[in-house]
Length: 146
Image (cartoon, rainbow, N blue to C red; front, side, top):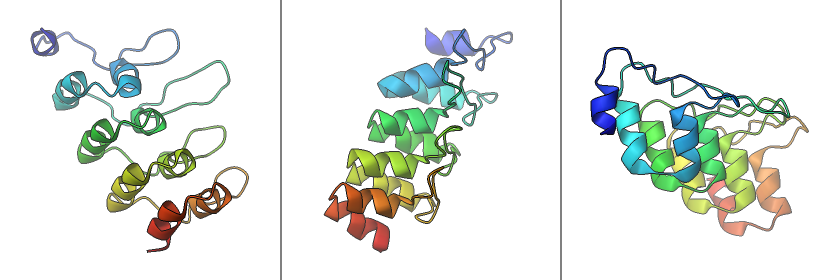
């Protein structure tokens, strides 16, 4: 059904709800690969679209996927050109900061494989390496140093 809807000429795949979320943002939070993949096949999908929220903190679909620890969804977003460095607009945390803070070594490795910069600093001036050290994530600390 989704593919039939997406095949229609007048479909706006980037239309947003009242919170500024498009279908890709909503799907990114669930990690539902069955829906993410067809959305990403649409030629007009914006993988870098930021949403909006009541706290003036905007996120890309990749950022949301990483924050919910959905590695397969993060992988397909990266394969479709999502920017591994796209930070949120308030704290300036990149997906690598978030994956490090969550202790998700698999996603950290995935982001590094797609060009995430270990030296990018958040709004407080901290790089992901600091988060790994601060939270005692030795495995991630080692990944970030390699």
